[in-house]
Image (cartoon, rainbow, N blue to C red; front, top):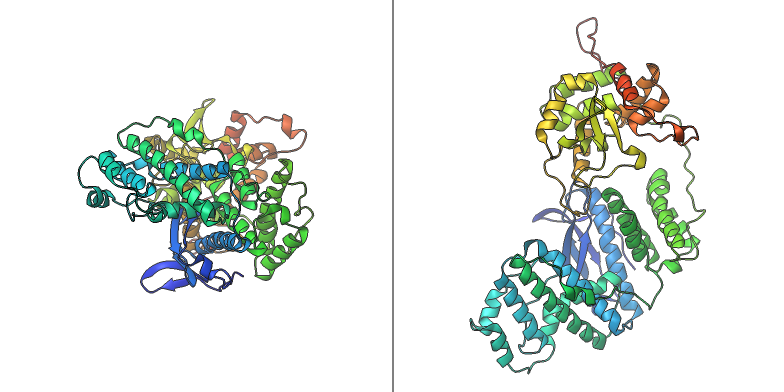
Length: 567
C-alpha cells in the first residue's frame, strides 16, 4: 500500500522540497539497501534530472526543486517507480531467456554511451575504467568501485593502487581468478537494478548473475567506444548492432510501454510529455500495477472519482486527466496492442457557469499595458505585449521567435511563426503561418533590433540543447511575462494576463470590419467548414488588415490623471 502525504517534506539544510515515504512492510526487508534511480521530469522552472537513493524504512530523496507544482509531478513519478518495484517484488522472480538478458544489457550499453559520449574525458580514464571492469568480471580482484547510473568517478587512483603503473592488460592477465562474483556485483550492480527497474522486473539469483555477466560485457564494449570518443573518434560501433530490443513475453503490454511508443511516434510538446507523465504515474499508483490489459472501465471511473474527490478541477479532470488516458488507449487499440478501450464512454460533466467565461482586455487596458511596455528595457516585457496586441498571435508562439523569424514575404515585412530551430512546438498544423507586422511596431524599431540578433532567440537567453527533455525555455519567458503583467495591476481572474490580448485582437478585428477568415488566418485559427478548406488568404489581405488595425492610446481624464484599469 502506498501512503499519501498532505505536503512535501523538507530538510533544514536544504531549500529543495523533499520526498519521504515509508516502504510497505511486506516488502521492506526484500528491498532494503536497494538503490533506486528515477529520472525526474523537467518543467518551465526546473530542468529534468536524475536522482538515486537507497531504500530503508523510508524512501527518501530530494525533489531538486523549490516549486510545489514541479514537486507534485516529480513525487508522482517516484511513487510510480516505487510501485512498479514493489509489485515486481510481490509477484516474485520473472523468467528471462538469453535474448531478453542480452537485450537488457544492450539498454545499459546505450545508456552509458548517452551518459558519457558528449564529454568523454581522456582515453586514460577509460583504460582504468575498463581495467577495473574486466578484473571484476573475471574474479581477479576481491572488490571494485561501483559504476554509477549517472555521472562517473575518477577511477584512475583505484586502478593505480590495484594494478600499479605497468601495462594494465599484462598485469590483470597475471592475476589469478581466485575470487567469487562479489566484485562483479559491486561493479555493475547498480546498472542491473536500474535496467530491471525500468521494466518492473524481479529475477532470481541465478538469472541475476547471468544478467550481471552480460551487463559487464556490454559495459566493457561501451568502455572501448568511449575511449575512442575521448580520442576524437565518433564513428558508430558495429558491436552495438548485436543487442536486440527487449520484449517482455511474460506479461501483457504495460501502460508505460504504450506511453513510450505513443510519445516516440507522435513527438508531443515537452510540456505535454511532462504533464502526462505525472497523470499516468497517478493512474498507475491508483491501479497498483502497470498491466494495460488488466485495466477495466470501473478502474478508470474509480480513478476519475478519486481525482475529483481530491479537489482537482472538473475541467482539468476532463480535459487533461481523461484526455491523456483516452489518447493512449485509442492509440493502443488502433495499433493492435489492445483489443478494448476501457476509457471509451467515461466522461466528466462540466457545467459551464455564468460569470466564468474568459474575457479580453478593453482598449483602455491595452493602451495602459502598451504604455508600460514601451518604458521597459527587458526584451520580453518591451516587445511581447506589442506583438501580441497587434498580431493576435499566441504568446507562446511569439516567445519562441528568433532573429531569423523576421522576414519579408511578397514585399511585406512580418514574422514567420514556425517551430524554432531549437525545437519549440506549435499548437497544431494551422499554427504555422506568416503574420505581417504593424507599421507602429516597425516604426518603434523592432525589425532592426530583431535582425541584429541573427540566428539566436529574441526572448530567452540560450537555445535549448539538442534532444533536450522538459519544457522549452520559451515557456519560462511566457510565464515571466504573465507574472509581470499581473504585477502591473491587471488582476482580473477572468482575463488571462497575455492571452487576453488575443481576445482583444479578435474583438477589435470584428469591430473595424476585418473579415473573420482574414482574422483567423492572422491568428492561426483553423476554419474547418467546407468553404474554409478552399479559401487561401493572401499576404496582401493580411497586410492591409494589420495596417488598418488601430493602436489603443491613453487619453487623460478631465483632471489630467490616467484612466483606472478596467481589467
